[in-house]
Amino acid sequence: MSEHIIRVMVAKPGLDGHDRGARVLARCFRDAGFEVIYTGCHQTPEQIAAAAIQEDVDVVGLSCLSGAHRYLFPAVVEQLRQRGADDIDVVGGGIIPDQDFQFLYDAGLKALFTPGEKLDDIVEWFRQNVKKRD
Amino acid sequence: MVDKVKKIQSGDVRSASRLIRHIEDNVAEARSTMKDIFPLTGHSHVVGLTGPPGAGKSTLVDGLIDAFRKMGRTVGVIAVDPTSPFTGGAILGDRIRMQRHAEDPGVFVRSVATRGALGGLSRAVGDAIHIMDVMGKDVILVETVGTGQQEVDIMHYAHTVLVVLIPGMGDDIQAIKAGILEIASIFVINKAEREGSSKLRRELVTMLNMAPESAFPGGWRPPILKCDNAFEPSGFSQSVSDLALSINEHYEHLVSKSLIGNWSARKAATEFNEAIRCAILDPVLNDLMANGELDAMIGRLVNKETDPYTLAEEIATRYLKKMT
Image (cartoon, rainbow over all chains, first blue to last red; front, side, top):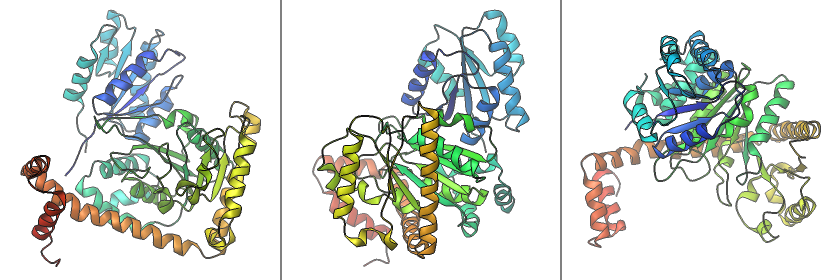
């Protein structure tokens, strides 16, 4: 009997070293029954994309609190695309001003979560939207 | 399908990591791909690292990747972390220590969760080793979950087993107990700058002195290597290069004393056991689960209407008609 367990990578691109939020999410995904690969702070988009492929995750969750999301989030999407892995979805979270949302969605981000978001709602989004790949 | 195998042989990470995923998820087609993979295996030197949580296994793996890459060898890593027995979820965090190698095409790091396996590995580990082997990885480092005393499954999969210890874990009775200390090809005393490392070394030496000759196949007496503080990069990388040399030496020992054959037989037996389990036990349990019988049986056990032994015998007679 096949048993699909959602695999998520939680990653922090760039120089932002504040990973409390990322760790809380990692724990909350664990409690939701997902397998969570956490790669720590200070990752380049290239490192994140390479690791996501090696780990065969369904989705990469990026956390950025430094304001560099407009550069870093699309860079991860692009790196995955260049490596032929655009079936791996990318979502983001952090301090993201409303006016940047459309820009990031256009760049290929599948969802954005900002402060005040309920953990249960985030988990529910993953359950509804993470698709099983062949 | 053969195409898939060709891609893996050419080193394609996407195909390999997807296949490992399908093995973990128990996808039926994956097992038939493994049938084509199996005959192609046997190239890699498999090195296991085991030891208590926080002993520094992941940091050592990171150092060893570096050391083997400097020797011009390609490296695969399988890092196992525990699955929650309650939610089925897992945090796989070993990779944090190894991310500097993420972009090196000669290195493939894959984290796996135990998914209920008890021996310190996961059921997918044997197949993941085969897959990395067929990708052409020269060395495959397998990091077990943080272990206690009894999780010795790694000895069935690795040619060379490193038991990683740190000072201050217990008194000298621990050193004469059975289990994990018996499976070492090499002992590593990690964080050796800490108080107690000489005492730990003495205890290990005494333990080895008391062991019968038969405990040292082909005359290999496990060396005890100390690794200094990983925050002092030059000393640490020197310790780790020495360790890498010792690992190579152990493999040469296995080859020169013709011990690889024993090892292969043990590994084949373990894999066969596991395959039989997949082929016989899993379908039976799935069947009982699907028709709701399993829950009913558990109910009867809770109410003491029957006992587990009788029930198991009933199931065996029903499903295994040929057994008497």
